[in-house]
Image (tube, rainbow, N blue to C red; front, side, top):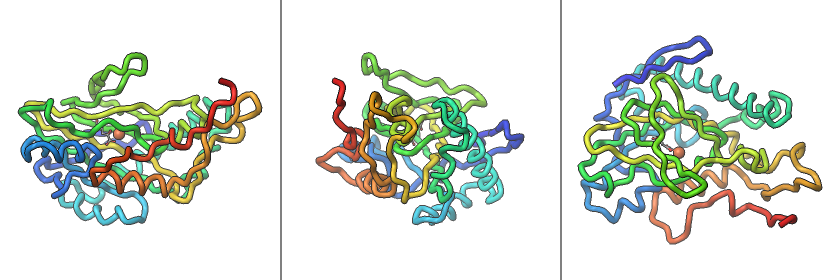
Length: 270
Ligand SMILES: O=C(O)CCC(=O)C(=O)O
Ligand SMILES: [Fe+2]
């Protein structure tokens, strides 16, 4: 299967993947915890491979990617171009907050962005399987390429209903992540989402996670806070937050994953 990608940076190309090979011996999502209670067939609803764009422990997955049918060049080009798009979006978000376009760029000097290839095999009993369990993306932004099968759902805030996001040919789905929510002091909000599996068709999605340097201390931007609008979050270290999330994704825990609301400060005005 090929996902054709065209970006307004002038680059177009395709990522070619052989779905049958996107598989790790261990599913990697938080959904795994729930799925562990299901019989093996229903449990096998997702496989993923990570592809790190910066040096770090995740980089070891790079070799796996190159064996999937895509050439090294295709993959590297895709990574470069999707990063350009991420910077454009970042700059637009910065401007929309009344800040200089490049206000947030410095956080990404030693960025730790990564791409994940998600494979959701068809499951005859989709209601028993979860592709990716409900979560918010902890990063700054997620840029999702997907095929035309569909499966992504977002939680509507007003009534908690899960709403299907229909795939649009040639379009990405952009998720604002937790970091933008905190930097913007809640002017932007990250969305709760999940991916369900299809009863007949396999699905592939390729999210790019735009992640600042792990040493970044994430806190509301000082330009956006004042006496009337005090900071709504305590500062936290992004690397610690990230590793805590990843660790807990691999195991069934009694406690909830770490979340940004754990850093929420009491609201002085109400
Ligand atoms: O596959 C999808 O549509 C969503 C995947 C996702 O939310 C994730 O990988 O964080
Ligand atoms: Fe996500």
